[in-house]
Image: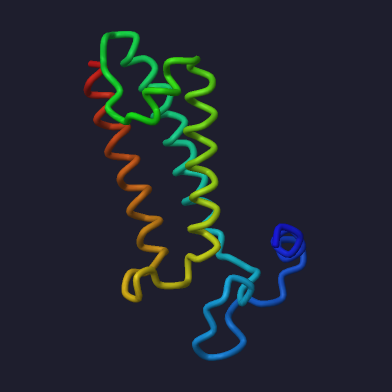
Length: 131
């Protein structure tokens, strides 16, 4: 699957499904530039969130996510790498399915924009906490 993804990125053939109703992952190997820009914004905001979280923790804040709290027990680097890695992996998967529907109703593209909006609100909130 990874080989097909890389090959399709450099030699795109299908910009849309060949058959009506085709929703398989391999049905499309060309994705619009808007998804790249949105994915990059999400990962950038995720990195900003990790940095701001570490700053807030130095000032006495408390991490409410139990998984991330465990990672913070080690080092800030491990926390940032896992946080950004998990987010980036999720964004890649969502981007691959951007033209499909989740749960039969919701456009995955709309979910991607929702994740972007949530990260923007979170980073803005963290900036207000730092003030």
